Length: 177
Image 1 (cartoon, rainbow, N blue to C red):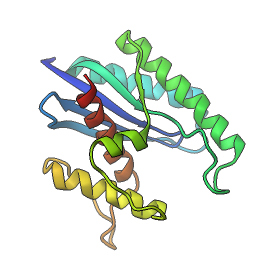
Image 2 (cartoon, one colour):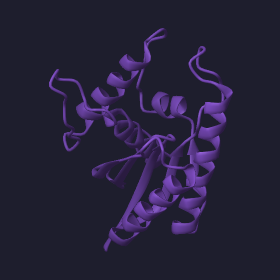
Image 3 (cartoon, helix red, strand yellow):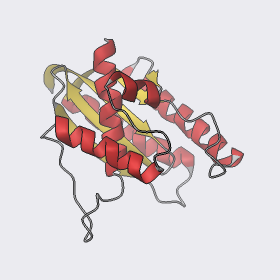
Image 4 (tube, helix red, strand yellow):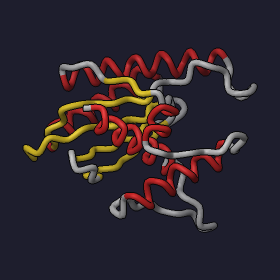
């Protein structure tokens, strides 16, 4: 195990989880993504996530865990109450998994506060896909160690934005400890 203190940033959704391990010098040590199959029950997804956390704990001395808060407002007709309830439920399961593995409570982070604190300005009216590109470009610009694959059309592969969001959450977390 590496004895250098590090932090863990997480972007949790019910279909994917972005994972970022950063050292206290803001260097990205690990950036990963867990993708879940749609037919996998939430409880199994939570167990897979907890297993990943256990592996991270073996390799890294993680002192703090920061988790992006789930949305609590409807997103312009795209998000149903059922979807929001599912996300809240899964986020709770994942938070409990963090508690089980690291024996401390995760610190919940509002993504808008994190972005603002890091100086990431996304113009009002920006479409969701463009917001994702802003975040990926911010991380790429400020962290040369952040690499990702692209599609045949030259776009970031699915999940790159989740990894970038996890990094943003971790970077914000570093500023608060």
